[in-house]
Length: 607
Image (cartoon, rainbow, N blue to C red):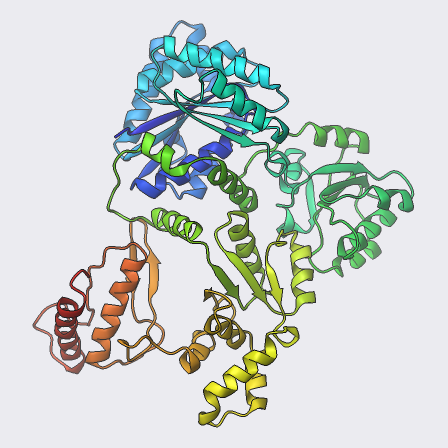
């Protein structure tokens, strides 16, 4: 089994951070403890800077190592050592830092350095030396932005030949940010040159969303003051427009994702843009930047505060022209707080990289331990392979809408949202989300409604339910969602973000009921601890089960754990840890343990 991998790029700005995210996601599915290491970081710590990729990986994958443990030297420190002829000291320092990390990890993913403005030969030499000293196989990331197919092929061949001469073990090449129009030609050339027949090669097309900065990035890099819309700072800036013209001309220039740059005293522009952002007939802008150190006066501020979920409004001291130049020069990155961009990066990686093939190449053995990150990654992968249709009754809730966007972007499930259509569309627009692939249903306006009412009436009429009662029930979002499952129109339902447990499971109690071998409904809580995932049952439905019911809950919980890929080892809890305890509750748990053990041996021998 390889215990490390070194990812090196052919030049700066190649989109490597998105590749690192995808690789970490792949590794955490199969390896218990994965850590991340950068031999060199190109930042100025004395100015308060921190390496963005380290921050991103540490945050996204909840790594238990400190920032300082995850790098060896800054580029400035490394350059000084090289200039003084202390190359051996440089590599010894890198190796010591790396070895300290390997003591805590089962696998270390290393990212090479591409220095802005440095000669590519310097980057290449130092990355090769480091990877060889660490004993790492190499993955090459070739940036294709603004390159012809000829230039790409020539560059890749040079790097491959050079790595081979230097004795590097090249395991794969990812060609990133390729113009979609060139992909077919590039694939033909890779085959003709026998590049893709000798190793794994993956082509990832350019994704504009990953290359566009968020409003939050713009604000941070320009040291802007955030005036309004702080919770919407993750909106992507696809373009910018300087609003120095009359409104009728400005409105015609607004496109989806436009950042409006205007002097802070142009209240007419500010209010017109906010009105356009609320309009269902206008493209949704990403935000407004106010220039010249000017901010709206108090009467205008009161109007702005009256807009619900306003787009971000930020203010800078520069004049309009200077601010526009600085925005145009921004190089986007994937920051830890931008969950939408992280989701997009993972979705793109999973779509264009054969995860199983690459995993077999870089990780040969699998662990039986299931960490929370493994659990989440494997669960999403299983869901993606066996794609199902899920209904979300709480379709107007912000958390639900954001989660739905993540799942749809990664093509994990098909989704139906329940609620008032106008309200859901309004929330989607105000949050700047992309949910075009979601089906939105208002139960009372659905063509399914009358059929559902009649079905519910037939199922429950012996309990005294009238058709009017059935109609009232089907207006309830949880009842309607549960009936969608009963009728086979969806495969499952997720609820409980704003509804109680009772509201969520009551419809299933009434007309879906339990499987034949279960006499009661119970709940299972999946608890993600630092190093493992545990299943707890039952913490929500049955306050005082009998011994027989407790045994049934234990078996159901074990089956659920196994279903989720957790090896079930059942512990029956009471307030007595041994045989010395006495009392009705202790005896009930002991009896339940014996019943569960016998049932498991007889009915579920593999459990």
